[in-house]
Length: 562
Image (cartoon, rainbow, N blue to C red):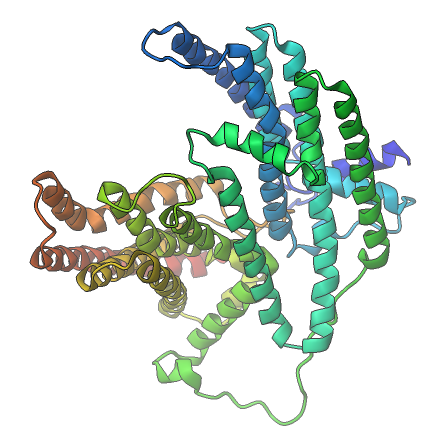
């Protein structure tokens, strides 16, 4: 193992994500402070968090109002014990999402195999590169906060031990993600070879099914007993499933804190062996499938191509508009890095669903809490999908946007096709979340109709407004992570989208809020009036911004700059 080669590959991975826009795309920003700003920020936040936690805990223990608190040392160590498991779960989420975002960029996933490096060095560099960004920043933030807090109470050694265990847990999650990536690569290739075009849908359905199962288990473990008893239940959970190798790192900390050094030594040895086994499994899979390329899908030849009207043509779309809609449909179902667009609505559906099933340990079946969670499952998934889609509909073209510039497409046709696709996609999300909400929450018929109509009004207005953000701030650069919208414009879009959604929902919120405050029932006629006003607000906003989008699109096509 040549560690210089590993460090070299890590530097390549780090620099590949910071290409400067412009003509000379081979230049990099080498300022060390700017290059590592997420880690400095995480460190500062962690230190401030540790100081804040010390102030809160000191106030709580010195107060006569709060009683029945455990000893300060016991409470601190009980939190330190579960931190490695929390880091393991969050690191796995971050690295898995990062792999999906990078999967569509070949230059980021293919190592320069002509270099004199071994598979062991390449695999280790890939595993460590998975930790770059949010995973290691999260570890630094939590770990520094724990050490600062522990230093005030003479628990600095325990804090350092917990920090070391968090680093090991993050590395374990990264190794696991690397194995899953390689297995997915081989599986996708096999499915392509055997199923042809059907492989596209098999891959998409398989990926979404995996995330559904993962997030159900994730929310069950994190929120399974309610927020009050979370720390105690997770500690008990670790003790119960001691036979699961992923828990051994956290059990090492627990055994050291309780003075069971023999068991702690066994956990250290077994954890090291387990991590080493996973690493060599990743090396083996890299040797077998690291250079594997799935077969390309070929089109049948023969005959002369003649354009057909098709379903979209019957709806009134021109051939150019229909081509853009079909292209967007293929992009969002075939490009692996676009799967994240599907994941956000899944999370927003699962979370209130787990709440309704009582998994989070609190009763939200009645009162304001019930209305909030019903609103989440009916309104948030579709509205947030419209926001995301509107922002990325232009930037997802990437450097292939020159095809739109070169095509005889008018600004009206471009806006019309993009608006139709994001509205259709968000409406499908609304239908799915609405069906789930009706099945599990069983609202009244007027309530269900109101929720669905309000959801459509929100997604329509938000989607069209966010499309303007997508036109103003697209990011066509193809670096190690395809952002598709510049960060500053994404933040602006988040604020503007929230304001637009609040404006559309204001009549309904006002009507329901007054009914709850006065102790009366929610009248059907009041709901109908609120829905009518919300629909009018949504229609006015959509019409005005749609015309604005036509002007922005005209400037966009006229400048034709990447």
